[in-house]
Image (cartoon, rainbow, N blue to C red; front, side, top):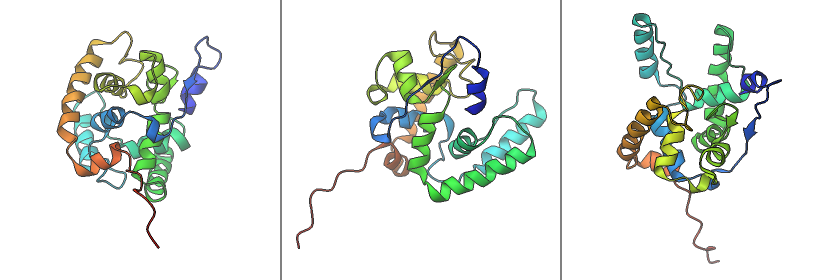
Length: 204
């Protein structure tokens, strides 16, 4: 995120970012980013070792590099670190990932991710994306809109939302399917729904 700010410095492109609390974010948007980026998010401790192993095997055989960063790792990188660097930065990413997993918890991490992830050139966070692409607040995004925004997350510069790139549309359809598949998971449902308010005070 910090490096993206500097990349816009001195250009005519403005930075769009608006913080919103989790309760102000559409449940469709919460589910869409989990379906797109990290379907094991409720279950791991910050790292998806099976995905890391698969990515390493793929990268040894292909020139098209594949990442395996969890939502927690992406938050650690976007909030605390610079985007580029070697093993030293990677080590710091591991440290901060463990830290936020133990201190913040999953719900806070997801809220941070939805507010700091780049969702278009110079567009940071789900509120700025919703306003920029659909002229509505993040709390009013429907399934299709949320999935389209989530579809850009691997590369928001290449996978454009408006106008929609062909690969973005393909990813949106895939994410919509994955959203239906993972929605019944009780751990995911707990993250994407808001806690019910207390029914009343206990009687003395």
